[in-house]
Length: 176
Image (cartoon, rainbow, N blue to C red; front, side, top):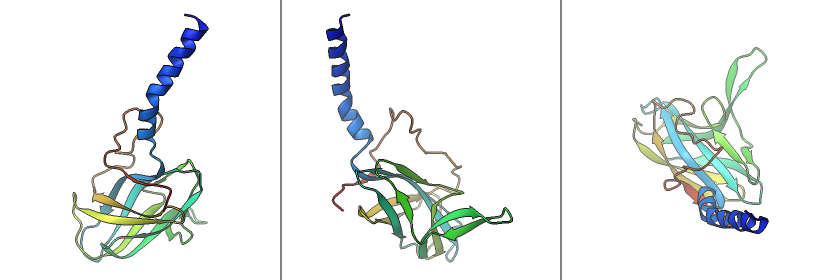
């Protein structure tokens, strides 16, 4: 195969891959794989976990969150104290999300804390969660309660992106 034929074949392969790449990495702020865990009963607590992709050219920050299923909703993380004990703390400044990067809110790390549930939440229930970003503005996603889910289950392998299904994912353009 000549250099010209090899180059033409590579160019054609690249051109055919563009629509799939655009579909796998939508522009704007992209939030997916949203799920919640809950103690269930009114007055109890729960947490929401998700993956965020900042597919923009601008750094952003998740600065707040709302959900009508709890009296208080806060951004939290876990930190180890001087005695080696893990503590959950409110992160008032929010979570930075650099341009082109992703950030996972996951069990044992950064997460959305639901305090004082206003209704019972059972496995399979869904509820809206509104994420508030400095640049992207508000993005509302649906969280599904999944108390049986183990850490890492359901998260996609982000190394290949070849089999990603974005039909259920929420995207927000860069316009705010």
